[in-house]
Figure 1: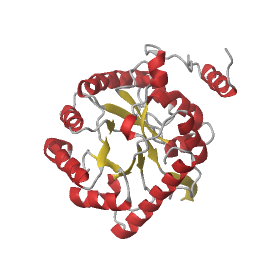
Figure 2: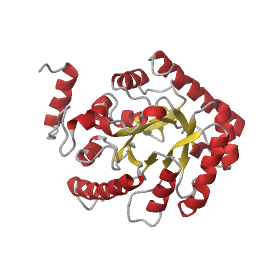
Figure 3: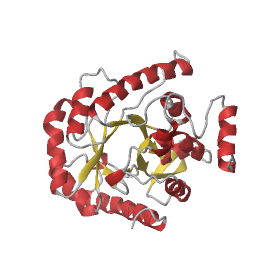
Figure 4: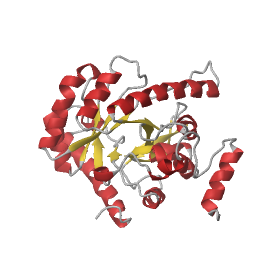
Amino acid sequence: MKTSRKDFILNAAMVTAGLAYSCRTTAGIDAAKLKSFHPSAGNEQGKICVFSKHFQELGYNELAAVVAEMGFDGIDLTVRPEGHVLPENVERDLPLAVEAAKKSGLKIYMIATAIVDADDKYTEPVLKTASSLGIRHYRMGPRHYDEKKSVPQNLTEIKASLKKLGKLNRKYNIHGECQNHYGDGFGSTVWDIWEVLKEMDPEWVGVQYDVYHATVEGAHSWPLGFQLVKPYIGTMDIKDFYWKKNDKRWQPQSVPLGEGMVDYEKFIALLKENKMNGPFSIHNEYLSLTDDLSAKSGKIKQDLITLRKWLREAGLLV
């Protein structure tokens, strides 16, 4: 069997890291399922949402109207403390948000939550309600490493927690996703997400892939991490940045799409190669939550135009 240069490099990197990886098999999971399954399938393909955090001041009807006016397909809604929907009010308020979106010709394709524990009192009500309303994806809350324990010990505990959530996700037919986020928390390296997920069913537990954060942590090596977790990717975050020196420290500075250093040409080529096409969530972290609504909407709409242009040029949108 011939091995491509890309597969050879990837496998060599994994051996060096001490990880038993094969492009065609993953322990405990049917290889054919991993190869063919993508949680973002069917009528979710090519759909672009806006992250509702940027419009926290708006009620459900106004939010839906503004998002529809900008031309988005849907909303990535915050369902978490201080979000558009508070977890304790999810059974009452999430149906209202979904109905408002529907009236404006939109759909809530995904929600951003603080969920990290299957046994938390709000976890099951949030998942049950979201699933009953046709929401297929939820982003989990962030997980942090316990510095008093080793990394392997942390990963063992996180794996056990995610397995419990996976059972609950299966019960309610919803896909729970870890976001890879730059920093020193779980998921920042992307490799640690794969180490935890590699024996789990990608139909129920996976990744909300953030190429911005992947680039911060792996400027040129991020495609390796993408190749590892791609069977588990359900949704994708879209944003851009460059490095800026603040107070003698270099920090990622968020900027409009196309003005930063994220290699979207490479990223979209990988999406096309792997037949992956959303749903996407555009994040506009360069904006202030207190910015004027009209100005904010104009900038976000431009990011939408930019992303759609790139996807059309790649043949991923008609």
